[in-house]
Amino acid sequence: MNTPNFAIDHKGQKNCAFCRKEFSFPDIQWEGGDILYNPESLWLDSVCSKACFIDLDKKNGRDAFALRLDFCLANNGVPNNYLRCSFDNYIPETAGHRRAIAFLTSQMPFHKKSSIILIGPPGTGKTHLAVAAMRKYMLDTLTTSAAFVSGPQLIAEIRQATLSEEVVSSESVIQKYTTNKLLVIDDVGVEKASEFVVQSWYRIIDGRYAASCPTIYTSNMDKAEIESRMNSRIASRLFAGTNIPIDGEDKRGSY
Image 1: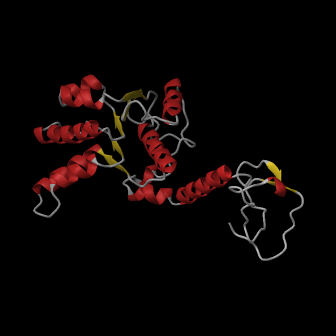
Image 2: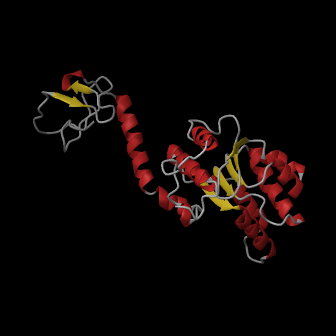
């Protein structure tokens, strides 16, 4: 508590800086004491209760984090084309789009199942929704422990580490992608399904499934196609989470 060393006008009504409720100075107690002061603006920025002070502090932290969120997204792998993706600028065109937004913006999208897969034809907005969900997750939890990677990029990174003689090993790459707090994997299943590709996908998907790590996948393929292209073990784990179909026409190139 800051106690100013000059006279303060305790008269009049003020609005709480958080809940905006109108209150008068004598009404306020701060853990049995006097009101918390902002020395520069007297009690203009005062709060009506300790609960509001805590909530205001959280809001200020959230606002500060939001200002650097685009940088965090870029630093965590989100491509430039998708850096601005949010639920605010996604235009739903079908009932399926609206259901997807309702689920992804809910309070606890990972409450019952640790993974989400967005399934649908190319260009229907799956990646936009996945990045929007990643943005919301990071903002809600104030964490930077989230990452975005495309399926081909992930497989290429593991392959390069396998063939390279450098310090980075394929095991360290797999560990990196199985320990993120949140991971978005875009375009699962587009690579040619060699033995190496199938084994790599199994290691990543099974590792995150076993650890219940929150994961968002996007794919143009349904469960039967993934099972045919890879195997039933991968398909079972990949589709064990919440399945969200994204329908509609290809939006790419339209304006």
